[in-house]
Length: 185
Image (tube, rainbow, N blue to C red; front, side, top):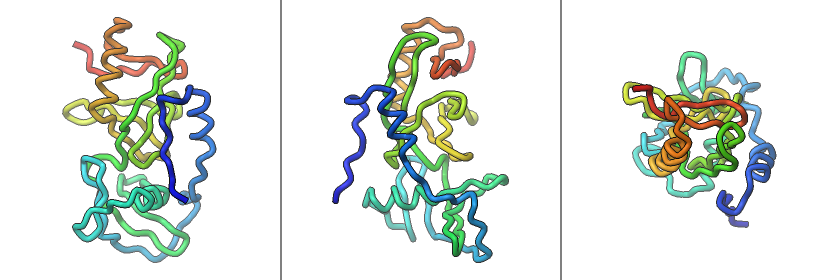
């Protein structure tokens, strides 16, 4: 049965939050296998996945592998199963936030993102938005130390909303928390 990724435009934020809560991920945080190695996999800065230099083009494979990702305290990333953990190279962030849905205004606004893995994330206290790196690019916490860089189109949508609201520094509220989306001038 083919998987149809969610279309955020046709959903309200309550429906998006419900879909996000329904996603059952493997308990990778509870798995501590002794066997470790290298997956020979890489997630490029543009969100594409590679194995032994060849791109993984099947979305179902990317979704499956992304559900096994774990970030360790030292910042290393691993694909984890009960039997083994395999290091994975990540050039920037493991995910890319590719679509934005916004509902409400000002302090009552909620922001939701669809990731390139088709996971859904609602920004808020558990999923903060941060400006990271030398270029102060926006990221949203997907889960358990795994971040998603907010892609250009959703970022521009956020910038338009923030400019219309006139917040200083430019930023937006989501689930009662304010997130700057540009550094203060």
